[in-house]
Image 1 (cartoon, rainbow, N blue to C red):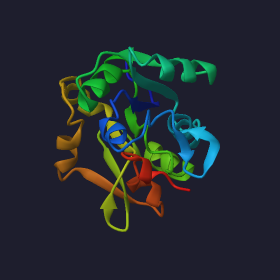
Image 2: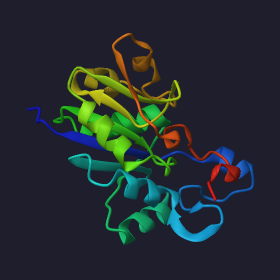
Image 3: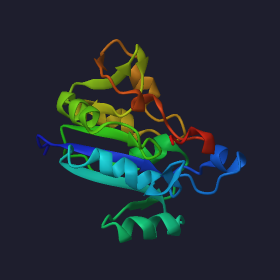
Length: 194
């Protein structure tokens, strides 16, 4: 039975290969601010900005990423541990465990600079028939809202491509926000703000 709630799905099961190739260690555990080594780790900063704008939250991590799991436990979070073939596969596994919501707020764990108001706006705009994408200066970013009517398509995702195909349709609602953080994920050490 579907409820009138939105579930945040925080995708944090990637390998971070570009970050490591550029000389970094584990991007989700790295300090979120380049010149502030005591700043929150990237994933925890993302979760802090997300706050409680969703009614439920699932943090998806690779089952073997023990350091990240330990970090989340220490911060009071219990992640969903998965074996993942990529972003889409992680999303499908989370949706399978959280089917009863009116929609999902899909959050990338390596985007700590998204403003709380953006999460609130996208969550509020997410309804069963909706696809919501925030835009800043005409460019699409994240997080994205996906309504419950798209559950079957999400459950079939099995690779790295995520839900991109859904957002090519004319049914997408673009939500203009004054938030450059929606465009700034951390792929390499130089991507961190100071």
